[in-house]
Length: 225
Length: 226
Image 1 (cartoon, rainbow over the protein chains, first blue to last red):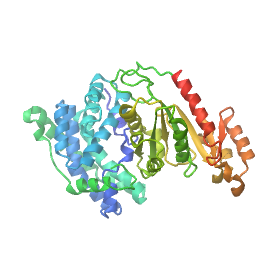
Image 2: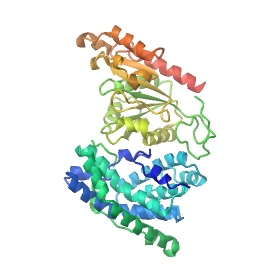
Image 3: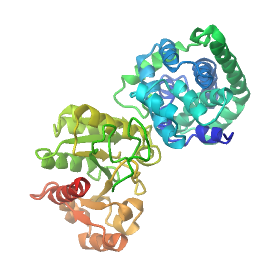
Image 4: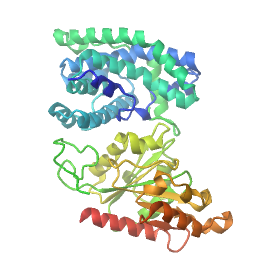
């Protein structure tokens, strides 16, 4: 067990398919909602407190041993957009592929057998974090950070934004990432203390769901979601 | 290229494993990379026409902004649509074929599951720069396609694609007189960069077309299934 495993898992270069996804930023840029550093920060803040909180809580609950199939169904129920459900499963499948080589365990193999086309990425992230010897809080951090780092990196490519400015956005959001991770772990603890998956947050961002459906219909786009 | 199939006791293959989950040998995977406009998609289309009667084929394309190459192959009807898959690359085609190959691995495995058994899968990169190469975790061999109109100094400049690809294809030789490219010089420079690795000069508009590349692919397939 090593805390440094968190650095491996959270590394933006971890080969789990994330580079092809913008976390909704491509649709937001085209719609004029992200035009520069300030609006990127607002977008990331909104995503962090909605999709980020939900993802972090699911990842944490998976580490604490909540039943994976129940978590996966609960994640489906919290994702109205079919395009986003599809993207979440593809990313879950890709994460699992990389993780099975990085941290080979019977539990990860069993998960691949049970979900050959992928489970929701945050759920897989939690199971992977456990395989890597990480805690619920580590997994929550990973999920919350990923939900802002993805759009920030994508906007550097989409708007030719100064990469230092984009990194500044991430640095300014870190204390909020802390708070989201803490709230996520609290919710995850309630799940395993007997409240079940209904205790997981269901914060939604309707514009992101709508944007994802719009984006999925484009003939020309840079990112898969 | 026999990889240790017992290394991972997993239910599904992970990357370069030579066998599929059911124990059968997977299809040979050949990558085609090279600069924008050098004729990768046209070469893939010609290969499909040359090989499809004898072999079970599928193609994965990696466009920079999705679907163009896949749609060209569909329009040309070189293969039934269910045998062509487009992977989206998030503006970084070289990442999808080298640094993070997960989406491409998913595509090749899904093709084998859905339209298999397959003998050969061609993985075409989006047009990229001279440093783009395929990961060994994704393909068993790679072809780098350049063309005479892109500048006859490209073989001399080298780079990982030109220097290390298993086959270098110099395409559009019919254009050489019009763009002032010196084919003899390109051949000499390629030889200097690549030593014994093969080079094919081709024009898809000529009688011979893709014949040499198709023969090379058949040799690789014979070695793979031996």
